[in-house]
Image (cartoon, rainbow, N blue to C red):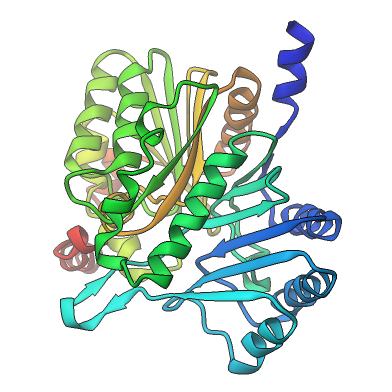
Length: 362
């Protein structure tokens, strides 16, 4: 029994760098025998993008079922790029994020690969050379949640083909297993819904269960009222709550909007640390037991307005790895103190105040 459990645990792997992620992803694509399903928020038409295209074309010409979903707002691929894929038999799907009649922006922010209904990749990593210098996290699963992930992927295809973007929650309700998964690993698909924020609710459950520590690493840290309340309660219980954010984010409005909340977060006893370069991870680990890795940012948009995908797990071995990664990153960070924060410049305060006016949108 013990050996069987250890064998199961070895089938999960965490990535912290893009180079190793790309190497393993391309190797798994080369080994594909039946199907390759991809869903990415960003695919750049650069050397890496063309390398991916070439591999998908080669597999499709060998009769492999290859389906490729990309977000129509954040990904800009030329007609030539798409035509090359489609001529070879690759089925491409452009996800419509902007809906002008409804004045709505509902991005597909997921980063998903499923190969042969066996190997899957889920996390925060996109496809492009510009990301090679970023710090990020992704997880590779083998023979874990494959059927559930496949169902989520084909749900996305149903939304695109049926033009059901504004009714996605009605489809999600059909995934009755989503909110009642009992196994060691769970996969949660987030869709636009103010009333039913599945990923946020799972975050809150984890935070409420934490007894020793909560380590968060997020590119954009704008916790909603419900999440901030849960973190504040955790601190009062004696839980060590630490958050790593990038010192300078890649999106100006999110960066300053996030920093507007720093004073409140610090007053609550939550410790904030700034990483010296771009940190794009979306992870949390609690008590060497529970963890999550996925595409969802710690923002209202990710929880309520976007299409996201996160893995939640109770796995002591993987949780310990994620804790160790967090502590290694922590050595490179500078802690933000209350005393230092009150001395920031007037210009910075004005920028934070201005961008925070729109934080409910992102």
